[in-house]
Amino acid sequence: MREVYILRGVEKIYGRGEAATHALRGVDLEIYERECVAIVGPSGSGKTTLLSVMGLLDKPTKGEVFFLGRDILKLTDAEASKLRARYIGFVFQTFNLVPWLSALENVELAMSIIGISPAVRRKKALELLTLVDLAHRVEHKPTELSGGEQQRVAIARALANDPLVILADEPTGNLDSKSGMQVVKILKDLTLKGKTVVIVTHNMDIARMADRVVKLRDGKVVEVA
Ligand SMILES: Nc1ncnc2c1ncn2[C@@H]1O[C@H](COP(=O)(O)OP(=O)(O)O)[C@@H](O)[C@H]1O
Ligand SMILES: [Mg+2]
Image (cartoon, rainbow, N blue to C red; front, side):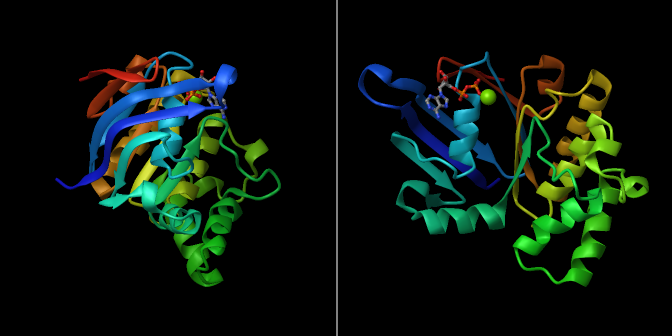
């Protein structure tokens, strides 16, 4: 299987001098195409930092990161943005939907940003909302949806540009366990459609649904199971 990510000795230090925080202290990790990987670890262990490096949102202070064979330290910001828009979809704990837009419009918005025509947009947004079991809720606004439904809209939105990778940071953190499981099942099933899925979670029941669990502690990988 092709490697989507190769990380070698990745360190991330925020700030300088007295105020410096060593968020990652030498992470070695490979993530392969079509894998569902869970990243677990206590609060402050570097999970979000690791995800932002994988999301090409932040460069490591030290070490190497290859994304689809490209050395991310050599990318300009513009090149990183372009790769991110083409290949990566994000899902957040707080859903981050636009409150005044319907479910359908939220998904369409993500497509208008990458320049897909309105007619194609609507058809594809409907398909994606059907995929996450929300065909009956497309006209609803976020406040008219449950947490689990909002997160499923957010997953449909993350899929709008047909990314290769989905990065989800505590996607079930604001959900009850039943809707959390449903959301993770949807995320995991995306691997059957060729996606690579990385889920940061506190919850071991959720992590166990992944193909592989990576445990972080104090900015280091302590266990890969
Ligand atoms: N932008 C930032 N500036 C300074 N310190 C940060 C920043 N982001 C995270 N940190 C620090 O880095 C460490 C790891 O944070 P984070 O990656 O958010 O951990 P987690 O997601 O596992 O809770 C923490 O000590 C946190 O306070
Ligand atoms: Mg975090």
